[in-house]
Image 1 (cartoon, rainbow, N blue to C red):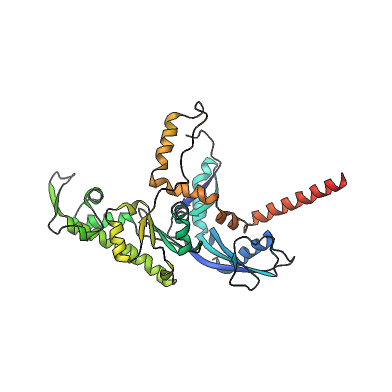
Image 2: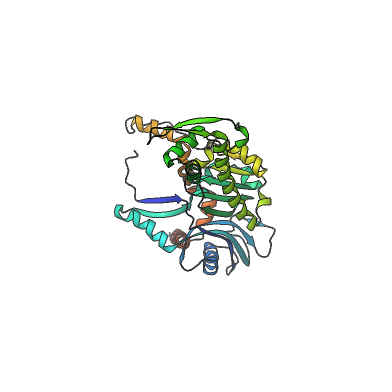
Length: 364
């Protein structure tokens, strides 16, 4: 649609192979002021200590930097700050090296380079979460088809990420197994008659389902259906909050839970979730920063393509893609990028050019 050649991509995805950890790198400053080199050394130290040898650093998020021994002051950008030591706090997200290699192989035939790999919950959270939620403490839960991705933020810091193998398809599988239906029948029944809130369904409510393969009919108790659906979502929440309890984060979620993903669209889920979790639970809303702009060159762009893009903006399945774009322009990403060796090379080039420019000015 854009009529352009793609040379590189950012991949935003979920995987249960994700290994995450909060870590830090402590560096002593040689030249009195903090430079990009010091930030790069801090991440290198962190990787050497906390990253398994058979893993690749898929993504890292800089949580902040402590200057000297002042543990009460966490700053975002320490470059140029006078200090004798810094402690850089990180959230590391790692993948097995073989998984990284396999993903790159998918794009090799098309000569497309993989620039960045992003955990999809971080992308979706960038789209979905409000500033107040990130500050007060929030658990972002993206319920997908086969997996559920989790992020926890507090004081604007990413503290926790995880992906579990429990998603919306498990609900369909439970319905299929419990009621003796095919997966297709179970999926249709779930979407048309299902709810996650069994308290709102009369125990005497029934629905007649016409079987597609045998051309006969089966009577479904809708309260029983709701109990099956509710039980699976309770199972997902139990697994999520068991993980959060292990790292002592439950008490820090003052803004509650924000739900995203196809599995979050289940009827009755919000009411059931509030009741079961005992906290605020809301669905992801459309991000007002994402909106269509006016097309000035009417001849260059196909009208139908423009209409398609405007429609896509309102579709939740594209929120992760939009979130990835927002994340790529965020301060969070910019600060984290300065920990890579490429940033040091870029910094050295800029430093050389500045010195050269100064020399030429003085010589002329």
